Length: 105
Figure 1 (cartoon, rainbow, N blue to C red):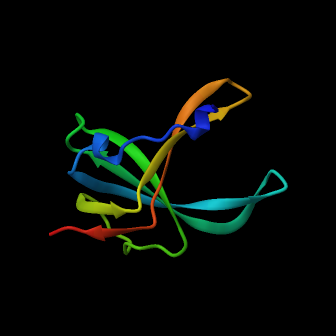
Figure 2 (tube, rainbow, N blue to C red):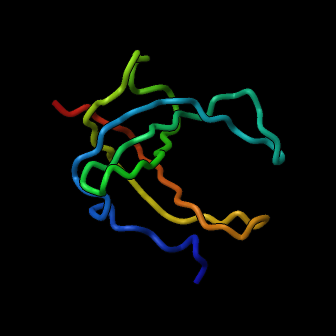
């Protein structure tokens, strides 16, 4: 079994999540970063997990309008969290992706 095959149970991250930042991520071709936006990275505070932060990537267009300040309760649909390894440093990191998000009232 590879470390990348391990998946987290989404419930481990709690029910309350607040969006605090949004920024684009770029695609890579032949191992080099391009100027093409692949989607957006949504930095989220896990309210039920001692305010830990996690970046969740969603492919495609920006789903939240630009804001002066973010502190928006959200829910991610199709959230998947797993590990990936940087083979240069041998470090493990979390990788989080989702299909979309919805703003909670």
